[in-house]
Length: 531
Image 1 (cartoon, rainbow, N blue to C red):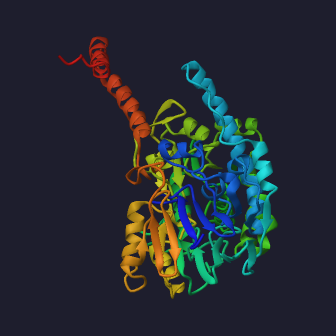
Image 2 (image 1 turned 90 degrees about the horizontal axis):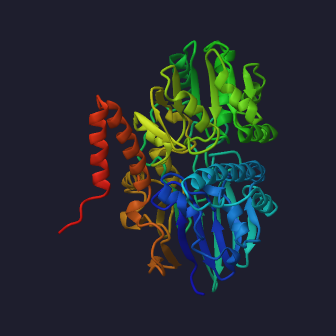
Image 3 (image 1 turned 30 degrees about the vertical axis):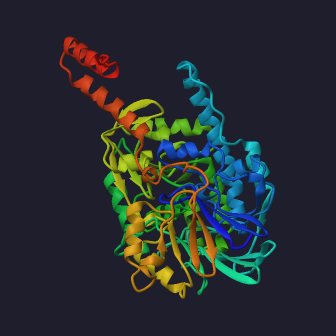
């Protein structure tokens, strides 16, 4: 075959869908296989065929359990993959919770979508994968320790380094030996910040040939990013949200973010910084993940604090659908932590439908919100939104705390890259939006030469030679044009148009004027034929 080839099948000029394919003489390897999130144009990729044959993938190495890195693994198995999935033991345990939950959400939401499609005489759709696919996927996991080389395919070995991002998260080092020449690659995956509650600082080797680094917060420079500052911000937001008949809704990733919030809220209440407030964790996956975190508490820097938070009498976990629905009937101020963190699926959407239009509610966003997600639309100041085909005014306070992010900021990423030197060849920037990648690249003069910083397009492929990376011509048209990745799409425009039409009709003073407006809109949809 010659030189190894690296193809960027996800998280290229965008944040989600992490998937990197390494073709070697010993077999093809995937680094991650994640779900696309955000605009529907990108989410539709989850339903389309992979840009490679799943049965030809010899092995997968998974960096961590977050759905944008692991969420398409069951589909890979459904489509014919049967090799090992290498990951840390904690990642395997978390995927045992997250992937079945992801399958359940997809089956549930597709069922509801098909009901609406039937009413509109549209064809039914199938879920991306099922619970059976998720179970088959989990059986392929092969736990690996940190800091120990293990064989992947003939001629390729790998080593995992603690990435400090999530329980079990890893940066992935690969050594490929072909024709007597060795090539070393390092995939950062998601790098944690210095102030993480539960994890040590990220690690990694020095002196690789190619470095593939995330850039999610490459344009961000957090100041005063300390655990004390994080808890103080949370305390102040809770105090500001308190209303006798109100709620604080926290859309949260069920894995790690929910556990960090449990720890910090429990500590604030125990120290008298906050009164005893009922906290409801409205996510079966968060409940199950919390048990995994408790199992691995000894490996967490904040393990004792986390276990103490679990003992709080204010903490409640909802399990059944009936218990979740009962939250809408609660009286008195309370806090609800519910998945998903970007408000894209799960129970948080039901809580938002009940509270978003009330000025007694506060929505606190505590993680990255990708372009096109409901969370990002709220964060950007929308006054009305559509949720599952219904229109809702946004009267709730929308607030954000950036210090719960699991990602390193720009200076921390630049420091992490500097610590990996010397770099023989190129640095690829991935897992970031355009502004973040450009800002991180601008931080690197004197660290990596500008001509050696590459920003690949989705599905771009490179031959990794002894003299550097050579971009290969694409064999097929791109699944998404580069300028459309991580951008609001026509689906978002249609939702905004429907909301604007409703607002315009509501503002018309009488039936006659309303009828005129409707006729004008119909005329725009059915323009007169040109002579």
